[in-house]
Image (cartoon, rainbow, N blue to C red; front, top):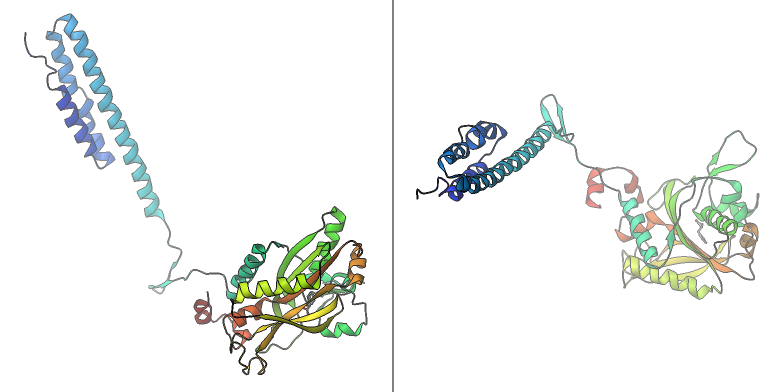
Length: 357
Ligand code: PHE
């Protein structure tokens, strides 16, 4: 019996597979293809040599050879797909435009990538704290009718309390008075009206956003600033709940060594009303110029919802009670990062912005 022409088929096949593995470009693959599987390839030569075998042996050997060819061909196809894919990636990579690379008079400038400013970051952090306490976050318009900004909040026309907010009026040539909201409190009215209309009381929400006042900007005031409003309407809500929320928020946001306190205050839409102060973060309560040597900094106002406000939105004050609070986001950022002048927040000095983000 002669040795089978396929005696070293396994070895030859594995050599072919190794060759295929070593092909690193589509061009090399195309060139190698003929010698791997073509008419003059090892496999085709073996095929021809089978003619000398007995019919029985030939059949078995033929099947063996066919299987080897299948393995080699599929390895080749796999390799081709892989090389095609990396060729595509390479051409995409070569076509990529570097939009950060700006060339002016042959000088390359790197465009720096923008990022959220300190106020936006502060707003996000505040939202996170309140969401962690079970509040949802809501939004309201910056341009409001007199009803939302004042009247529904128990501030009728000509009420002396209007003087508490230096207001920008928007002249739309319409009889209705339209203002840039002077605080986020009008969003309380939107939320309560909505909840009444859809029968979805209670409410536990915070409402951040931009507000406007005709103030002269100084170290602690901006004409366009940000507040976050809080509103709870539920059954059996007490002033203790309000104080608890304020204190929990203060410790969560400023840290355990900063406390809050409420001092009697006046707002037409809350009764009783309070001013909400926190330990001065600059002197940690020792007393310094920023806090006028009191050790405390005023952040905002708060109080129990005035029955007149519940009436205005159609909520039954015998069944429901609640509280609201509102304070400055910019002021929080100022306190948290100990900025001596709030105007730095809007001056767009990139050295400042980069330092604080
Ligand atoms: N809207 C008030 C202000 O900006 C603050 C406030 C909000 C007071 C909610 C009480 C309740 O002056």
